[in-house]
Image 1: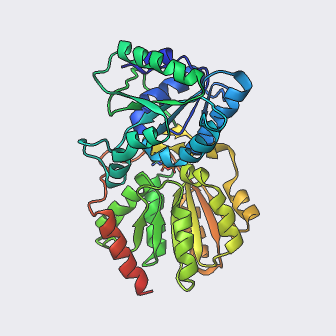
Image 2: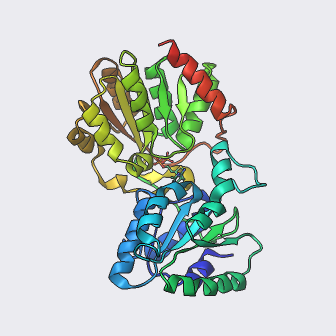
Image 3: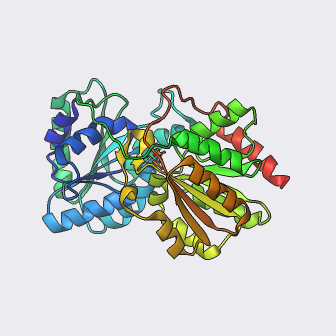
Length: 373
Ligand SMILES: Cc1ncc(C[n+]2csc(CCOP(=O)(O)OP(=O)(O)O)c2C)c(N)n1
């Protein structure tokens, strides 16, 4: 069905979400409809934020907000769903629109398989009634499902539309861009070269796919890298966990701006635990590039200043590969924790592949390498 039709049926006047490639049609349509008016559409840092923002909207307006997200974000909403929205607590109704990655029977990446399997069950456990939309679902069926949700919403319960691959369409093309020129893949190539045989923890999305291919091209194998294929926003904490146990080893984290924002509290913990051997690099394209390029809040904030205020020992921002190289060289010898922000353009190679080794193979090779350091 068309994204416009879904928006029309839901009738929500406020949307907040974390973008998902499977919901790109909806995200693009909302961007066209509401531009950057945060009173109508706000891309939040994580899905839990969305639930809370939606709650605030409901408290102020009495109306029913909509939250869109990938099913990977279910973990992030469980706390506010159980202890804020639930009709056993405040009874704040929210309409969720959830992209269903890893749905049983559809081939998907390993990080999506288990989450996909438990998506409907988790909603059921959270007492959130759901309706699945697929390519064949008609507008009438969605309208009827929404009519069925109305009494629940009126009683302070939440409800969810779970969207299968390809179910939503939007005919207009929305192009997201920023003013930067460095390609993320090139930045990562430079970081991998600077890290040498040190451990690298890379973030969710295309950054890890690019790092994997860079190692393939260089014939280096994959033992230096921990690819955080799921668990968005946690790679810097994984890197911190390693750095604290391996104080003699330089540990490099390749983060994304969307991921860094998603769990930004990690920066305060890095700053206060002061691992001298940690280098935290944020690829800042001010976008959720992996899932379609929708903007993050990182275009308008000063990440190095935040890191410095959190207690990092040194910070830098780079706009070019030359500046990045200079900062990487400095990070090799200077004590950390250090944050390097590299401003990047949007976009990736069209033929970018996916890791061909399994997460468990990745873990074993990485642990074997770490054990020698
Ligand atoms: C908790 C959670 N929410 C949403 C997603 C879907 N997702 C995968 S990658 C990505 C964008 C990551 O953005 P950023 O860290 O800025 O990296 P970029 O893609 O721009 O390189 C999103 C939203 C996810 N994997 N996990």
